[in-house]
Length: 415
Ligand code: UD1
Figure 1 (cartoon, helix red, strand yellow):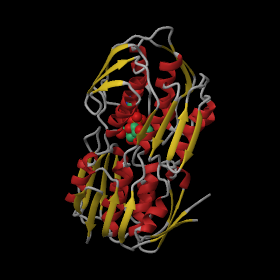
Figure 2 (figure 1 turned 135 degrees about the horizontal axis):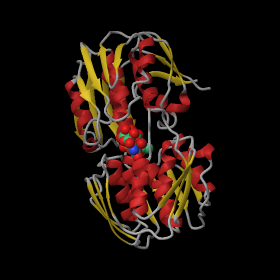
Figure 3 (figure 1 turned 30 degrees about the vertical axis):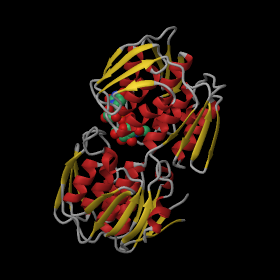
Figure 4 (figure 1 turned 180 degrees about the vertical axis):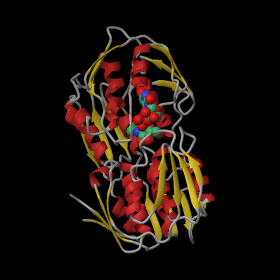
């Protein structure tokens, strides 16, 4: 099993090219299933979740290639088949196939999706959206079967702006003739990206990125080429690492317009940030200030960056308070951060982090994707050597975190 080995306390100086967005590309790849033809996707990150999604698409009869960050998906001969447990169990985004399968084949069968263990992750809102479009649902144990003789357009109202449920509703509705409205939609940039992708194939969708999305479904789709945006969470991770290492980083391809709340918080902790046409330029010197923040649906602070900010708070000057509003078990890296000397008290959805400086190296275990990245960030600022185990979690979403940070001067290697 690979381990990330870090010798801490080197500043970060240089440039990192930000990979394409994981949470953007996965629903887009699922969406390729809607078109009986070829879809080309560029700036695709080479991460485990992308490889897993390709594996599932191939299992369903698509022909896929991935070369030089370009994926070509030919879904002409795709057929309906239950997504095997071994595949759907590996990642949460396998659930994104339900919408396009239902739209194209009027039948979708999959297991309750896997992915990071962040507490209870129900799919009731996804299923409610399918029901609104006329589908019936049968669940047997972990198996979910969604089917319909006829689907019809509908007004879908979400009581909570779920990212995945909004994406699934869009993907299914794109294949249903007539006008479907989604009210209470999630507004994440990845949803805007999905709508732009479907638009590039000929779909008629307006309102992506707002809470009201209108889909004129059932229009015929054509071959297309689409470029995935830079990953705002990866960019935020590297800024989080800079927060405690200090130095100067240019994040090429990072979209500052999608990161307003994160950049505001980082500035309040002492980071100097300049938005450049080529990306984000950030400088940090001295110890970060403590902060108070809570996570929430976009445009609020992203839950995916909460662990890396918690790592930042661990060596900040003063006591920070964090409220996690999206996932109930997103503090699991706290226990590992404590092994590096962090002082963190968790009470329900709140964390109190007393800054300590410096942290010290230790052997720690990544238990989920973003928590793992947070441990890497913490290790960079810790005195001595840190070994981060559980690389299989980190590689689900980061193309090569050691390569990127080593390029900016960190002493870090995957062993
Ligand atoms: C997506 C992202 C994930 C990110 C999250 C929040 C992908 C692959 N994953 O996850 O990285 O952390 O958005 O920005 O893009 N919920 C329900 N019922 C449902 C669906 C969700 O109660 O049917 C709840 C969840 O338990 C959670 C909240 O809604 O408390 C947010 O979930 P959601 O926005 O759906 O996140 P995901 O799509 O799972």
